[in-house]
Image (cartoon, rainbow, N blue to C red; front, top):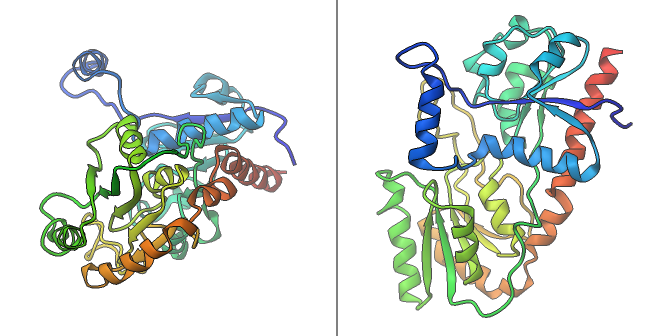
Length: 330
């Protein structure tokens, strides 16, 4: 089934007045002048890449057209993120909510009672769907946004480094140093393997691309990922990954252990054997690194992305979810 009308997409970052009424506008201008153009974060990337995918499959859409949606209360409003868009406005329309919203239903346990027009709650991956399902039931759906595989391409030529270490472990966390990173670095040095680092939150896409061009493989260090965009961008360049996947409880300090105890989670929720290999701790790193290096030439991570996570494939999955809601409304 195809969409006959344009989708109605909504996305905005929260930007409230701080000291004076309407001061958000000059503050926004000053931020732009001082910091330059805003770098897309994870949620903004969801909106951008969804629209890129819709363009590629020829599905029209409106973006943040509040005037139109107010005049057409029967049409679905697709609120990609963030949650203030739902909570701060009065919506008469049926709503697809997500995937860039809040992290757990405890933040709004009565969502479907307070907002009965919300028809779907989208989350980025399957383990998060399973975590939310006891609260929201079958209205929770896992939907990943696509990866721009034209931007993230494979690189040929000689590679200077054996590994690029992608480090998303927060500074000050025990695993940032003595429990994980330092033992990994020690093992690599003892084996005579070359490596360089890139740190989450401190790089541009071009910097990541430039470092991947010189790297035979990557070591991905993250406690958990709901989708794992950076991991999938690396895979799309056909760079195999040795991924730390400790499992265990969802360790978000805003929730664990007082509000939410859920397990297992994953740092690579979209993955198969073509992508690389995993390890769970410093204790099994060296053994799994050996297996990984021995199989390095056999991995085909870009094939996995091309079969599962392109802009077009994921945009079509979004359309399928939209069509499900359309059918239920008839």
